[in-house]
Image (cartoon, rainbow, N blue to C red; front, top):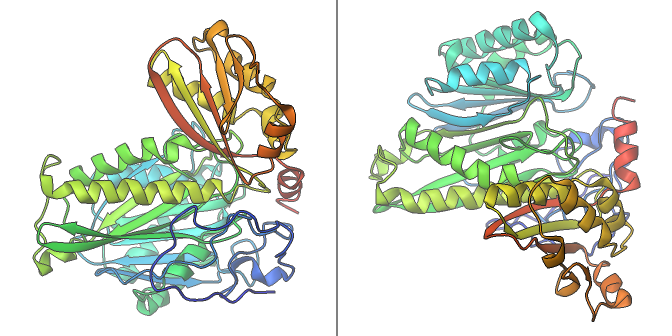
Length: 459
């Protein structure tokens, strides 16, 4: 049944929720609550979902951002009675920046967004859940065109100023006529305070909406930056997470905004993995309305402008928070895992080693079983293809040194490290002993629930 939430005064910082709550203490059983209006989480495609043990105790109270309004609807794209359509209406003068998946089988909406990012003008965003509109051929592109034209008519702009994203089942034809006619009424009904509704509308196997917000000083004024994302499975991003949308009233030129988003995505969303599978639909977009200029905030046209520094820091912080929310809602997870690699030839090599560790199914299942099987870390380092000195290799599980100089550490205690593995948050640190490169990647364990969720995904 839906869970009533207290309304916070401000926002919850990622990681503040206690992971100690049992995965079994809140199970959603009503089929209609997948996108329920008052529950923290919802039901996955095809099965009931246990809310992540890392779900925040409450959702952020996001302030209105001038020039941004939201509306949602139950369009019946895949299931009846579930909110699955989002329209964001953006004031004239809004610019967009973003990055998309590098998948060679990317979706029609991804290709459309790439085209529009070349000019960066934006007046609307349309997102649907339940159907990814990927691997759908000419019909997929036709569905995008129909959606863009309908949204443009509803908002009063050109189709090229409409950005589109889809998430859900791959390979199912998209019938845009099921929802395009709703966009006119949605545009009229759009309101600036409907952040939670917007975040819920894009969920699929997520168990909680993912929202974050920052207030940022710029010059003599202040701007607001807020965003939401979705993602719980098929996460090994090659640019972003599955879907992430951010909004600000900061007056920042589009080329500067694009540079900021690309840089922050590489250090946040590009450093997470749940199952090693990169989605066909990965998209992260940031829309800047520029409305804060009317309050005296100076416009930024140069990436070297010192006025930009607090915003750049806040953007990285916001994207890092949202990225960790994705990992902490990994399908079926019971552990949140940080993988730190140092001593690699360079940072690129360190990242490849870290992902080799984070994506190892045999290691992830050991973590789920609370087994300190550090030999599987040795295996993952070796298979990465990057340089590592076996006789200088050192491995820590949390504060505990488990291996060094090519063998088990002399003070290693299996019972002590096994006790550490019972924690909800685990850190694995590895020094490969060949250089100064370092990287951090975030992941989760691999449980029976992950198999059940994905076995039943289309059922």
